[in-house]
Length: 127
Image (cartoon, rainbow, N blue to C red):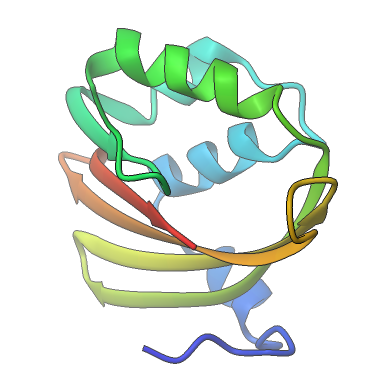
């Protein structure tokens, strides 16, 4: 997969057509948005798994909530969707371009989503 740089002009349009669970996750994970734990967790199946960019695994709503709370408060940054790819109805990849006060200041983060029954069952995050 090729990450577009500068951001792919079609990414914003493609992001408008993502499944509701992915849209909800991206909205709730955006630092400009005051995250709501209930809304964030409602995007995930109760037994969902998140593998973060450090390779740590979080399973279930309680662990995902704790992970998201610690992630959200660590740094200040902006987010721009730079690439969206649909493999089939259950597998999507979204690349976000982040700029902020974290080490290095700029990074493209890849989110690999797996869905079932309109909910996120697996989210893998990689820089």
